[in-house]
Image (tube, rainbow, N blue to C red):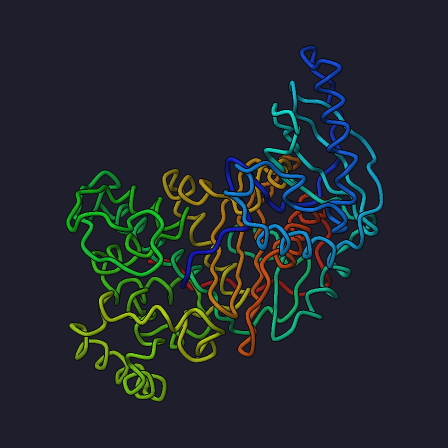
Length: 456
């Protein structure tokens, strides 16, 4: 429901990437001895920084502190330590610019690649820090699966090769279980939009009004009603930044029932869980405290009763009536009022999306690949959609390997109805699966997943 992106900030940026082979980087000719000394000093302090022995304000300059609050950095640092152990040593510092460099920071169970920028002020505090990847020694699908199994609540994943309509698993756990997936459901909307374009009913360049607004809309927040935008723009917003206003505009334009039919034809194993397909604002409204009575009736109703409730209350289930305060605490009804899919459902959906052979569709999925450039290095193509809200995290990637041109899906979901879930450890686990998928060509001893029904 709420848009999901891995931890990433620009200007002063922190991101969690994926295991990646170390790359030799040569010092630049412009690096002066003074700049090199500043870089070496701050690089050497990374061990103490991540161990909590250097004050945040003493290490980062004011611009970084404004962009990345100390609490956010502390949470990110704690996630790294939790997953990879205590920081141990600096393995290498390689300058890449006048006051920038790549640092290999060794933890107990992995080596992180850190991009570091040092300011020109007299105190030489750090202006930029980005963790682009963590290499885990002797990693394996079994190791990642064991860590996923320890997550509180429920989690499942699938890594599989896609061969036509065949899905050949490499690794999986709880792949048939229905999980709340948040904004991942927007891929079904993208699929139906591409199908209507292919049928000649619409064009990507068609201009339509931005007609419906929703909560948590990164792209369309505060835009004027009925601003003209193209269908391609709406699709790009919906997928790359998970914009909910763009999503709801597309649902109303394409039609709720055609999208539901597309979900069925793409092979969803339990489509009733998502029928009627809620707009994001309907989902937010029903989860909030302003509609406690309607929520009870909705949850206990069958598909027909739920559809009638939505239609009868369409003038009430609007952004103006969303109780945003409700979403400041813990999970809310994630097992009964959500958008659901199993890992196998997502794999079948990825087959359907790829079969569209739509350059525009694939480009929309690749705008934000979810894991950053280091994680994407082994992939000729990498498309992504994630989803999150309190108690829900989901990441799904469609990739084509550089090494052999093979297409794969990596998808994972984590639900905990009792508490919020942590982003950083989950992103790390999924990016480790992605790195393993880039090199593993030996399918697990499991039968192919049944293909979806033929597409209309």
